[in-house]
Image (cartoon, rainbow, N blue to C red):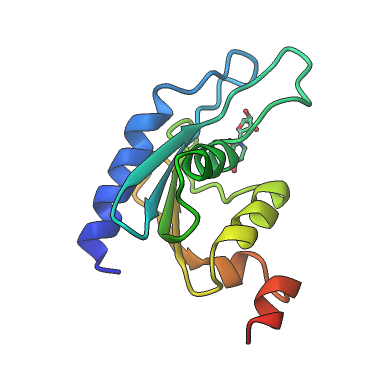
Length: 135
Ligand code: THU
C-alpha cells in the first residue's frame, strides 16, 4: 500500500466526516474503505438521541460496502477532524473490522493535527480467533 494511496484514502475519509450526523457529541468521524476492486466506500457516524444506538463511521462503511457486494478490503482510513490527536476505532468496530479484514490490512487514523497513526488490523485486534485460525 503506497503512502500516496493511503493519503488519498484518508482524504476521502476526511471529506466524508463532514456528512456525519453527530448533533449530540459534535464529534464527526469519517471512514473510507478501499475494496479489493479499487472501489472506495465511505461511512460516517450516525448518532441517535438514545445515545446507545449510535453507529460508528467504521461500521457504517463496512455495512454499506457489504450491501454493495464488497467483502474483501485492502485498506481503511479514519478521520476525526474534531480532535487534534488521532482517535482509533472503538472496540465494537475493531471486532467488525476483524471479521472482514485480514490481520495485515493497513489502517490509518488521524485527527486535525499533523500526527497520523499507521497501524494494521492485527495490531488493533491482536489474538483474534478468526485471524489465528487462518494462520
Ligand atoms: N465514533 C466513531 O464513529 N468511530 C470511532 O472509532 C470512535 C467513535 C463516534 C461515535 C460517536 O458518534 C462519536 O464518535 C463520539 O464518540
